[in-house]
Image (cartoon, rainbow, N blue to C red; front, side):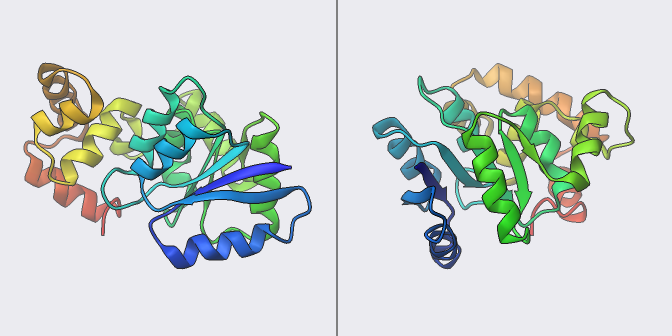
Length: 210
C-alpha cells in the first residue's frame, strides 16, 4: 500500500486529492499538512512512500520545504504540484531534488500514475515537458533568466520576494548572512536587475507571484 502525504494550504484541494486517491486499491492518503512546518514534523515522525507537495504555499514555499525535507535522514520521494505551468518550474523542482512535477490541472489518471512512479523510486515528468527538461539540463535551451538560477539562488529569490530580510533568509536556510548576500547579488546580476523592488516587479511580470 502506497502511503501518501498531501501538503497544500487549501483545504478543499487536499480533500479533493484524498477523495481521488481513496478509490485506488494500492494507495491511501496517510496524512495531510497545510504548511511546511506540519509536513516536516510528519515526515520526521512516520514513513511515507510519496509526498504531494504544493510549490506555492503561504509562508515557506514548496521549494524551501523540499530543501528541508532533503536534509532529513529519511526523505520520501516528493512529487511537486503547482498551478504554474510545468515548463516554468519543472526544471527547478528536479534540480532541487523533487522526483517529479505536475501542474494542478493534470488529469487524475496521470496524477495516480505519477504517484506510483515516484513511489517506486523513479522520476516522473509528463510527456509534454520531459524533453524540454532534459534539453535544459544539457544546456540546450533559451530559458528566461530566472530559470537559469541555481536552486539556492531560486530559493533566495522567492524568499526575497516574500519580503524576508537577509538575516531572516540566513536563519531560515541555516547559512551565513554573507552567503545570502552573495547569492542575492549574483541572482540580481543574472536577472539584470539593480534592486529588490525591481526583482519584485520582474517576478510579477513573469507570473512568479500574484
